[in-house]
Image (cartoon, rainbow, N blue to C red; front, side):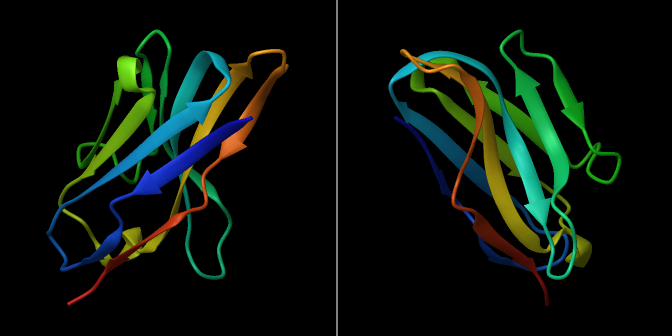
Length: 120
C-alpha cells in the first residue's frame, strides 16, 4: 500500500512564502511523477505543477515564476516552494503521485490535502 503525507500549509500574508512537502511511502516500485493540485472553495481541482521521473516540470500559468517544484528521489519526496503568494492562491493543496507499486499496477495516488491561506 502506498501513502502520501503532506506538510507545510498554513496562513501567510500576501507577498509571503510557504514550502509544502509530500513524502510517499509504502510498497513503491517506481515513482513516475509527483506534483500538486489545488482546490479553492467552490472551485474545481486544478493542476499547479508536476515533476516527472526525468525531472521535467510543468506549471500552471498562474504560478509560473512564483512557485518552484523540486524532488528528492532518495526520500521519495516532492517539495513546492511558493513565493510571492497572492490571495487567489488560497486553496487546499493536494499532493499527487503516479506510482507503480510492488505487485500493484500503475495508478494515481492523492494526499489528504493541506490548507494554504493567503490573507492579511
